Image (tube, rainbow, N blue to C red; front, top):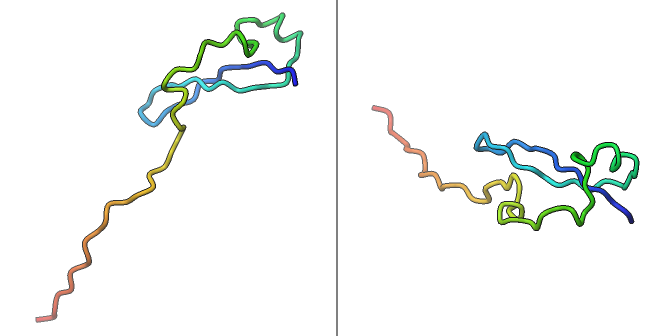
Length: 74
């Protein structure tokens, strides 16, 4: 399958911006008309360390809570 790539900004939890590469079916007229927006897969730079990290991974653990205190009525 022939494809083209667009890099879209995505907001991170730390109020930063991370760019995510999205693969789309190749449309030659878009590649010609907007070469700064749509790229061929071979035009992308090699992925960095931040590109290989999971996006939006939830915590799998929670800090254990102490049992509730039971007080006897006076």
